[in-house]
Length: 516
Image (tube, rainbow, N blue to C red; front, side):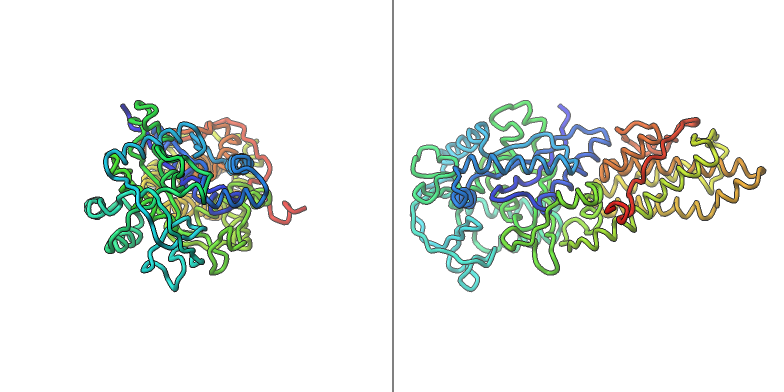
């Protein structure tokens, strides 16, 4: 059975509407998903919503709503945002789905039977926003070590999962698999955390305090801790205990892409859960950084979130995609400002890519009746065109993407083709060639090469800027779905001589024109 490339976003918490942080993770996964489809792989891209827990129950009560009715109103907002961003996921999972609940309860029953779950009384400190218990030693200045907010002292009887039993096994696994957690500094952060003894994980909450959750099997007085419930979505969504054939084709996951603030849950809780269950580890947990406004982390609690839908309405979905993918190396923090986004729109998208298309289409219209010229590639001078150029470009870009570096891939595309093509126009000066009948062949070759550069650029950009690249390909009368499995597939000519292109409207109109 051929293994499908399986990648996941975290499932998003639904105590409020989606923001740019959610969009960033989903755009990244969508870009990787589109790329792996382009290289001929089957892909399964899962995303969804995390709908249980105290924060959701509290948010629903504040609005005077039943928790299920509350989440049913929020979930469509995520789906609508993914639609306008061009996110092509394969499966949307909700932790309120009946199949997911069945899997959670079966896993818990099996782990308790195995002896990895026990019941005990707990005395400690509880952070409601993080939904986490902490010991006295773990607190920082008497506050939650994760969010720096106040904690409450609780004493209650709960079920506990034996994290401590598997601590050494996890350390050994990470050391033997250096690419399991990326970037490296996040792996080192996890190993540093694991130098201290792990506390067993409290995996239930009493119904006296929380009613909104999956009931713990065998106890009507407890519901499952939201994180234990949520992490299992990566298995239930892949068919674990539900569809063995589907599960074997998907698991292990190739990529769990998460924010750095939930790395501990994905790099410690989750692997240990899988060890206890006897399930193979995912191949990679990659933690990306935060988006900040100035020096402050963007978050709902801080009230400084940016609405992605508003950005798309003003600048287009590809602009937001380009900004988020290009502005920061995956793993590092990024700083968002609309001024910076507008600058990237004008300088990179409008002035370079958009202007390149406009210049090419205008010259083709003026000098060739809007048709791709008839040119023999073998007779085009090596200073203008050679197939090795495209093969090398594909090798570099695909290598960047397989190494999870979309920013470097975009930099290669911009410098090697888009900027180069604009420079080629200035060097060849087609407007001067057109005045000399003896240089007609050079003029036609130049325009043909520019058409090839634009066609190859559009194909390369399909995973990154799906809307704009499809426009270019349609205007060149080329297909918008491509499979490139080896450099030779990318090195051949794409444009068809004699094709009447469509100049169309500007790909990226000037901002003052968009506003008018």
